Length: 236
Image (cartoon, rainbow, N blue to C red; front, side, top):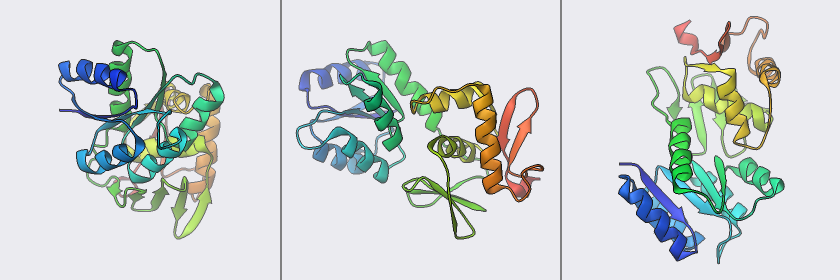
């Protein structure tokens, strides 16, 4: 059963969401402030978090960042704040999706399921090993989630937010072929609207940073006519 944590100070809204999701076989916990929400993350171990940005004890974006420092669980912001700046800040600080109030319960459920698909980490042998919650360890790389950078042989390599999100997707699913439209959707969720060409540019920049020979990449492979995949070197 999927576990959903709702951090929402409006008790009526929280109860409405809880009732709807519970009827659809979700296990739901409610927290009416940020302090209780942080406690429930540790105790309840949710699979997805619904986070209101207006809380009595925490500034919403600050809490979103604190949650991201604790866990890689998908965070869906539910907020009355509709301006683009607020949305982009939420994505940049760690939110996975942003849903403006009022919203339909059907859309909320669809967003939850989409976020769970995006975050599904069922890793085949030889893939990513999970280190601390703030790091994703790969045999030749460490993706530092908290600092949003890559470490290769103790060398810190700065990457853009877009490159970070693409890289995180790749190393969660080694060997999986990602279509360009899937990568476009990944970036759209953090507020960036891009096209196929922009994805190709991000891939080129990542290769320059992590490949010994970017013209003959060993990690990020092109699958002609489809997209890209991340390859474990031992499988080559």
